[in-house]
Structures are given as structure tokens and as C-alpha cells.
Length: 181
Image (cartoon, rainbow, N blue to C red; front, side, top):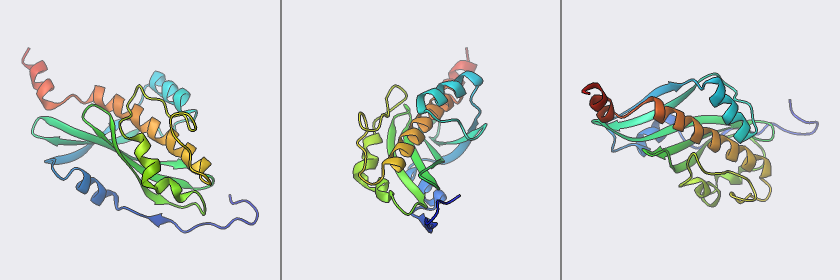
């Protein structure tokens, strides 16, 4: 519901998800997804760290592979800004470290500065052991505090979901070593 006097902003679509995944993982032989269903304990940990309830029971994590090697991961998700959802993508290396963060679609009338490279670059190199405190670890954006806070929570959730996916989907090389024992 919009506040009195507020107007609904038209969605600004910056990326087609399929094209973004193809471009980012252009050297990979294939990109598929695994469905991550966090356990009750994992859900509680994610909700406690992000300060937000998980919106869904399961999440799709894209896994890029070349032969038996995992090249990286990606999550496309949404987080509520001030009034509207912000759709974003987070890319990871094979070790679960953020390599890229993009705003895919932005609907708010204000706060679009979270699209700026200066803000998004702050997430690169962060992993499951990182903190995402706006104002401490992540510099806020003037006029976009709610959107920036939402991106901190969304990227942290993505990091934790990829960590679960990494534990659930071993590389084909390690799976074949395990099977041959």
C-alpha cells in the first residue's frame, strides 16, 4: 500500500536475468540451479543475522560448472526497499566469496543510488564470515538508507544461502573421489 501522496514508480529493468547469467558465466560450460531448502536451524541463523524473516521456504542457487569444476554461484532475489521490491543478483566464486552485485530491477521513486558502482563494490570479497552492518561495514548512500539497508540484508542472506548450497552440492571431482572410496 502506498503512503498518502506517494506515487508508484515505474520499474526500471537494468538486466535480463538469463542474459546476465550468460554474460557473467560466459566461460562456464553449463549453468544449472539447485534448490536450497534451509533447515529450521539454518532459517533461524539467517533470520537472526539479517534481522529479517525468510520470505520463502526454498531458494534457487545457480551453479556454474566446467567439466568437474564449480566455477561459481549466483542468486537472483528480491528485498523490499521502502515500499517496493528491489530485484538483485549476487555472484560468487567457487569459495563462496561475492564477486559481483547488480540491481536487476528497481521500482522505488527514491533510493536508486544503490545501483551505483561505489555502493555495490562494497560487497565484493565478502563471504559467510563477513558482517554487513550499514554504517559500520558498508557505507550508506545519502537518500537511499532504506534501500541500502535492504541490500545489506539481501546480500547477507544470499551469502548464507550459497554457503548452504556449497555444502549440499560438492563438485563433481569431490563426488567422484567420495564414490571411489
